[in-house]
Length: 104
Image 1: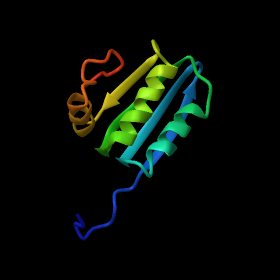
Image 2: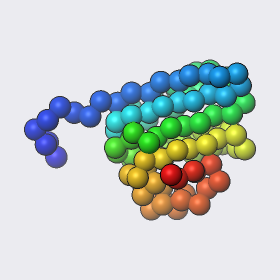
Image 3: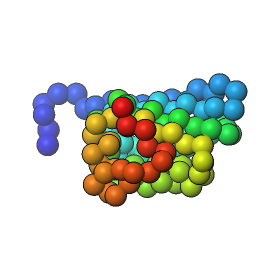
């Protein structure tokens, strides 16, 4: 629904610290942006990854799929920091108890 304002701005940025990659995502992650989020996360090789979704305002099934792919790529080395919205969607999807999910 159009709220009459500017559309939420999506961004995904990555920062490496040794063998740790931190990906910070903001805005709406949907079928048009989930691929960008995933590619940003996979661009740099890393032993550990933190996916910071605390500034994500919308999260759909394409976004869930991207996170599940990252969890498969980093089975014991992924940390996801969700926003309230992301936590709710992952809970509904049955992923609320995953060990990679670290709610605030």
